[in-house]
Length: 157
Ligand SMILES: [Zn+2]
Image (cartoon, rainbow, N blue to C red; front, side, top):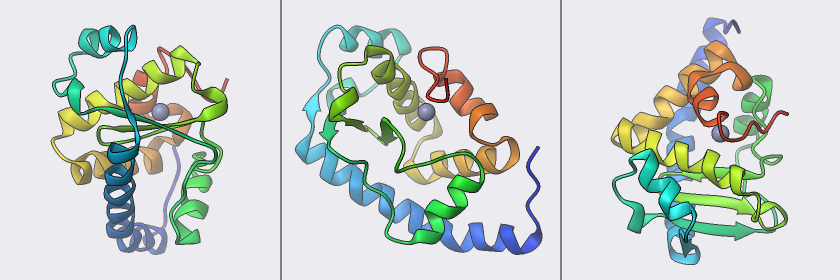
């Protein structure tokens, strides 16, 4: 279990609104630029119980966007999560995948699990609150939200 001192906890709380704003902003762009989820992944989305499958967009990118504030990245990396080094990233109903990894079906299935988790949380902000809390407590590889998605694909393997 990772330990965060009060100063680290304060930093996380201060950066959190910036994380939410960044996720909402990139989600918006990705929903405009991405493509609908196609078969066979439409069936995967259905099997997972995702409610708004029509809203999902998959945006292929050459490099993963990262928050402008370098403190956010540095902090995430402390707990084992490299945003810049991710092959896929789910922001609400937007799935970003690296173009070079876009055909890896199990990666897309992993990201679809995160879409369902966002839906279950009820909002981007509520999902991220839980995600950050788990990341800090368990670190990336062992946090329950990632463990659930790792049944399809484990990025750290
Ligand atoms: Zn994941």
